[in-house]
Image (cartoon, rainbow, N blue to C red; front, side):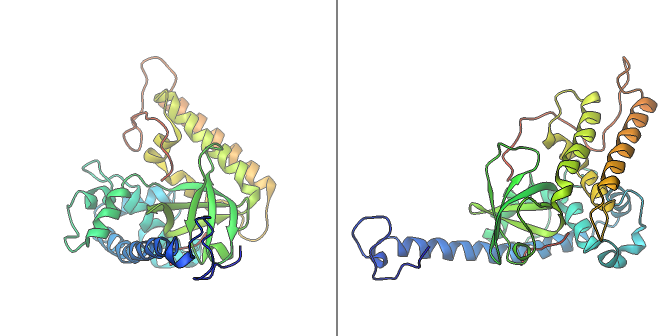
Length: 302
């Protein structure tokens, strides 16, 4: 679309010059967007710094996220082993891992437990992020160097999400998948921390993989939704990412991942007595079936 000059007629058709019509409105909106973006850039490091103080919860969380593949003392090596793996883990730990009091770290911070030096903008953002969880998104349209229009992988009818990401949009292609924490701000979304970037051939397999875990959850919690699954055990998305080939696509490996997951979940269900009368199992986090919510390797907020 051609750039509209200040003295050109406003595209709205009012007959006024652009500078006397919609230009001031658009400039004010852009100023507000930049203000909130600066708040995001200031807030994320504060969240991750607070996460580093939760040393008592870190070992169990680390084991869950990496499915016992790594030990906590390997944290410094994860960026090389798993592609910004340390940042991916710390972001998940802050947003997804339920601490002893039943809240995530982000929920604790939003309730005012810590971070007394938050600006008004940062406090406003933090309260809007409490429902954010690790989630897979499909790239629908990509504007290189600017942003990615995405949709929740689990819901083909969900609205498009406008994700502003200068770095990621240079690499992500249409129909590829981002496994990310998308945080809202003034009608747009941003990638918090680091995200896993998956090729197009993994899209349907990741959905099948997730469906197996949802089915297993529903055996003990009828009516559980995708949101319930991600609140209870969003780390399974990382378990899928960990098993993917690094160099070239490998369809047979993807099929193997599904077969092994199906067998493991069936075995776990049988050993726990899931499906037998009177049997139950405690989930990783409390599951309260809910209505689907509008959705609020490696890119980062930049």
